[in-house]
Length: 234
Image (cartoon, rainbow, N blue to C red; front, side, top):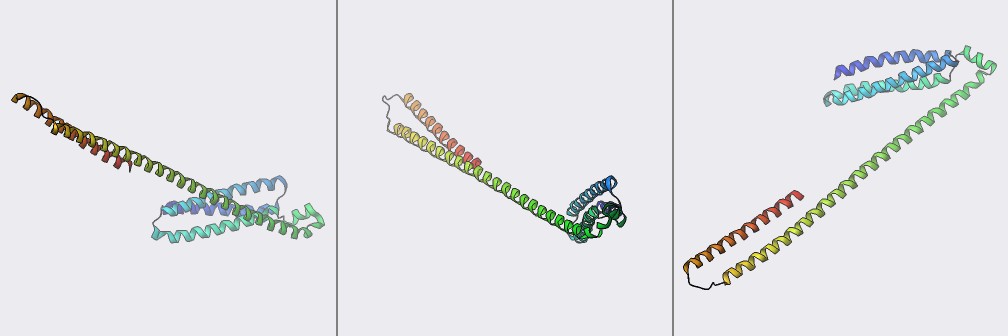
């Protein structure tokens, strides 16, 4: 990771050197030639911004104990970038003595204060624009977080409601099964078949036992299913 960071540093040094040279040439030019050089410098400044972003990403991949040194270097590069941007802004509205005299004649010296005032206003507008953009981004992120929280709460509420409904239904089924089983057991205990034939008595006893086993199995299966659905609901 550190080798990638150092490669970005080399690219940064090369680009900033070229930009510095071009910024020094801008005031000496006029017309279309100056416009083209300004556009070229603006494009290179954007490349430098991307390099700084890549450096920042690389630092995040470096072990914490080694980040301090790289963060200090990145901070100095950002400061150098800010100075380049300020110099670039000044160069766009500045002219060399030769070009100024050619464009303005004797009024060249009187326009210095106006250009300085214009530059100051431009910087103020750009700072205000950046603050507004940052505030808007924070508002958007806050709204997204709020929507996610509301969505999660709504989903949790639906899950809890479904679990309650299943629990009520299971309780009702258990109560119904218990009543049916109790009634059938009572009928079996109170029933005395007529006749004295031993084979019929044996057959009746076997039937009653089978019935009791079946009812017990149904009750046990109902309880197991109730526990399973409750656990899956949670």
